[in-house]
Length: 290
Image (tube, rainbow, N blue to C red; front, side):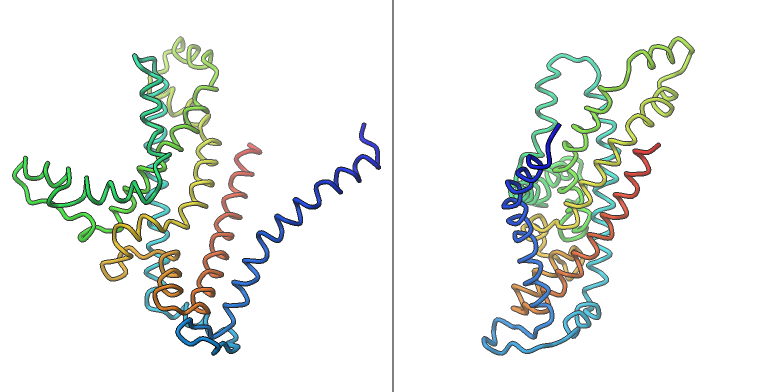
């Protein structure tokens, strides 16, 4: 049993790491909050003045704000729908005995290790390019005009790219959960005459609920900050058709050189991300209690 002295020594040894971690998080956040209350443009050095909530007012009344918020929600929802449904189907497929099962699993998981910038370039130039891409070539083979994905459906194209990256993660988590299912339950259901669909909906799907909730939580936190795929493929366009909140903050900070307005947008994005995280954490807590 740990004595009071040993517990105090443990806290003392942990304190440098805790203090460093707090500084690592608090200093950048504090500086962002500070800059969000200033009129701070990089083109006007030395002209910083206190602006109060003026930057927040400009950010909320920016004509690009609501389209960016809508695009962010559509991007997160679309990727979650594809990865969760596709992950369950792939997990069911990979759970079946097959020749070369190990190699197939590695190939399925491989896209998760590709950097977002690289995957965006591959999809942009090798798949979605209407002249030289694979989809354009297939359209020519079937005698239909090629579809310019990034110009005519930019947000849908980005959803496809990001979903391709995150599908292996969902598959891996759901496959692990599926393999923990007691095979005796499946065998008992088969002996009672339950068909494949009944076994899936009444045994497998409830068993995967907790894993699916974890997948949704982790992916949502990362999907709220998708940036590289948009920068590489569409630059937020055409117009603001594929601009999300992260890209809007980037464009106001580094393209318009308005650090104050960009910082206010960053704080708004942090608040929205925390609201979503708290909501999802409560949802996970309810699932774990049941």
